[in-house]
Image 1 (cartoon, rainbow, N blue to C red):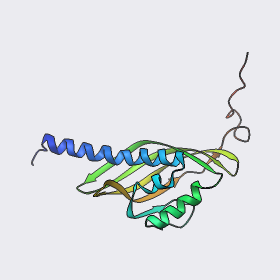
Image 2: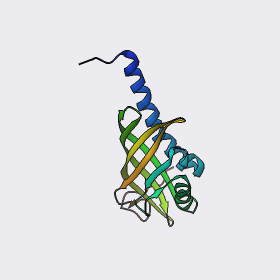
Image 3: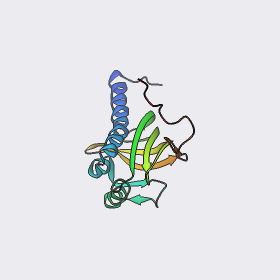
Length: 156
């Protein structure tokens, strides 16, 4: 069995970090409500399965989907963590766990889940070629949520 050279190891680490950066960039762009920024992490023929609407494929359809999701009064603030990546040449797969603070129809909620992703190296760098969003049910937080979920009032 041939051992990996330092260059091979460094190359793979650079690929993994570039892929992990896609998740961070995606979350950052969702926070900013930047449709172009969100769409920019996907390949031209990318596919997204949000779970709240039928799957969409291609930049135009992904743009329309995110305009609907991020264009209204609802707000989604994703936090990404524990991103597992397996690189195989110019393709890769990954799972990235998420926590999402949201305001949906005026209700403050929190949810957890994960992204199941496929990635592809393009001329512009690594991009997401397929994302499936897997969320657990959101739970209310704040005054309408479980007892004790509201921050205590400050004392003097």
